[in-house]
Length: 134
Image 1: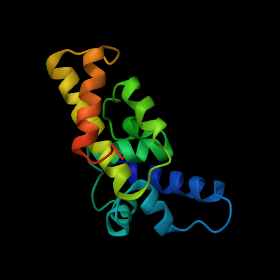
Image 2 (image 1 turned 120 degrees about the vertical axis):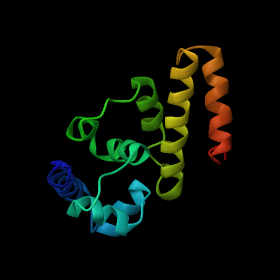
Image 3 (image 1 turned 135 degrees about the horizontal axis):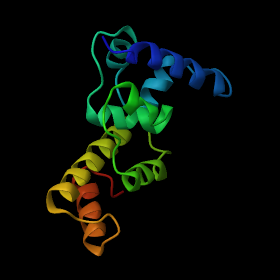
Image 4 (image 1 turned 30 degrees about the vertical axis):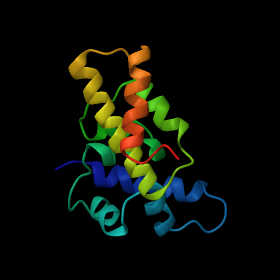
């Protein structure tokens, strides 16, 4: 059994204590971009987060979630991009995670450098696909 639920609960408590005012569980779920039922399932160990969900969790609670889940970390450049959009919440944060994972897959399959001009076009078109061009 994964130790993810214990880690996730501790990380949530740290996050909650760090918030000014009365941040609650619903606000946390919205920030992650997932419904309370899913987040509660992670907390209770009913199921584990999947790849895009892990990226959302990493963006809020830290990249150590990859180690806890015994997953390889995503490309550091994609993590930087994700961090640049930390103001997003709800569905936009979920869409960002999906877009970045798709971008990472394209880069790996086509052996594209994240610093190449081609990469910028791929990022732009993928963001548009997921409605992140507003």
